[in-house]
Length: 230
Ligand code: ADP
Ligand code: ADP
Image (tube, rainbow, N blue to C red; front, top):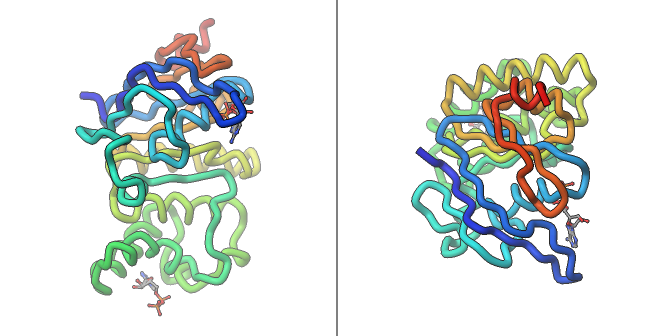
């Protein structure tokens, strides 16, 4: 089944730039779909239209059964995980407080939140007894990125969107994080769509890879092995 459907989606920015011309694409439930391609080809725009950080100019996007354009944008954003390159952790909040942000907005009770925060920190390899009370500046870049992933997954969203998620992590740390992320995704079954300009990362993490060219055109949509063979 499709978890996300793009039907003839278009994005023209106010200055006239057509970032995405006519995109039709399906993301299958429980898969990791990698969007890869050169800078400026419309990958981020596509990702950000999915949670309406960018307003589509035309077409239709469905997430589950929900029409994204008809949804309340705030609720829509809370219902999906979102991870960006320099995570954007709140510097004056602890690791646990950062992970607890969406549960807090949804008014989960203390017990449930604490249980979930602990679980998530364990899942991303940051044991809560050592990490919960630290502040972001007391963590390495890779550790901060793990907190970003934990925060995005806190309420177990069916869909996770990631924009260059591990781009700022050093190469060795990146490999480890990719492998761990893959294991976490398999455990939770989250549908993931992520953007990268790194073909190696796309092939390593993606169940399928969509190769974009300028204007949000999908040149190829295939298994990683086939993408590598071209
Ligand atoms: P990618 O993620 O593949 O690098 P983007 O989706 O960020 O590509 O950008 C696609 C095109 O849209 C580029 O030409 C970019 O300059 C343009 N673009 C992105 N954001 C804006 C914006 N806010 N206003 C105008 N043009 C934009
Ligand atoms: P507050 O005073 O805002 O509750 P805390 O830092 O104590 O600040 O907690 C923030 C959130 O993180 C709370 O939801 C709390 O349950 C959770 N939390 C704090 N410490 C831990 C921990 N060691 N393990 C799991 N969750 C924690």
